[in-house]
Image (cartoon, rainbow, N blue to C red):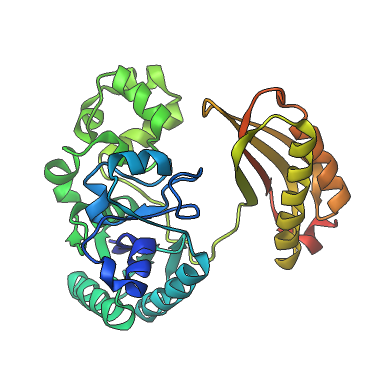
Length: 347
């Protein structure tokens, strides 16, 4: 039986900011963009005092300001968050080398080979992180990644929860179906059309009805998740899948010439990161988000991975002009994926 731990730092960006601004403790604090709710940008994180107003990650800053006019808005400072993250991960690595980072503020740990009680390990880890960084972590423990992740969310903030398979019916089935890994907005909408609102609803849904709405493979995956089953390993070596950059314009852009210029500037920055890592890319994607928030992507896959800037620039231009450029563009993004080591790519 595996024992998996999921560590999730509570309101991480905001908590790092509060270390620098202790006078803001107890106040609704929102971190996002340039910290100016009159300009375009989205919420990166918010303190729990702000979340009670319905504020969540990804929400436009202007909307957050309307929901909570008294909130303190702060700009994103990734350098500070990376430094704090490195300190947290030192404590995680002291528990086990079987560690899978997920962004700056969460990770999975496989502690199956540790003889101690898992709750004791979790309690000591939380205390070590707090004593070493003044930051609070929530820890979830389970027999797999799925239940460990759900467990870490159940008693936030400052939670420590162990979910066993025997707990699924009582503690997981009442939760919204969107709690499950792999159930995003679209899947959630399709499940709602089948009358599925909770994980328990999904677990009780006849297989033939589920397979009528989804592929056989997807339906089987959903049913396994609803019953708390997950065989994904903790991946100790992360394989980067893509490198990209996005920009939200302060005023909608209608100029195809400017979009082409901005896309090339983005590619130059992304290409520098690509070559720093000794990688080549096979697929180029250009994303546009329009004024009405509809988002379209266009991609081109090359015959083989390459790190040649001219080849990638041609692909970016081809993808960009495959879009409808006469509409007002709110956001532009450039992404390189299908990554491989340069030597192996023969680029």
